[in-house]
Length: 135
Image (cartoon, rainbow, N blue to C red):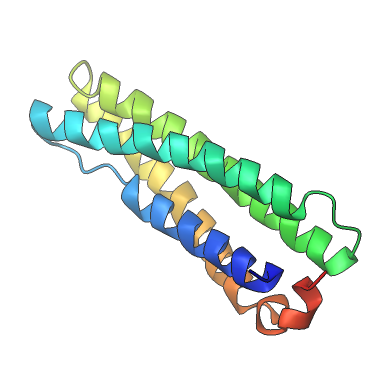
């Protein structure tokens, strides 16, 4: 598989993970447990995605590929932090529902910013010009 296609797949996968980790609060304990399981699965997917990203693009010397790699790596790390935040919120919701909801709103803003960055990354000329990611 060529690098451009692989990069696009990684961006799409990260977007899907970001969409899947969104918590819906307030909720009942069974729903919260299901949401927590999704967040835990997302953490595993992110670990694999980062390893795949490092393996595929981590040693690139092409400056445009290197920049794209660094941007995507940063977005993976931001999403990883969001999963940790969502996990803590899901676990703490029964103890402090109002505080959890306030924190959730802040985390959603951060996640929305990450999604905006992913959308921008998709539209970069780098994504349109497959030659720049060919090695």
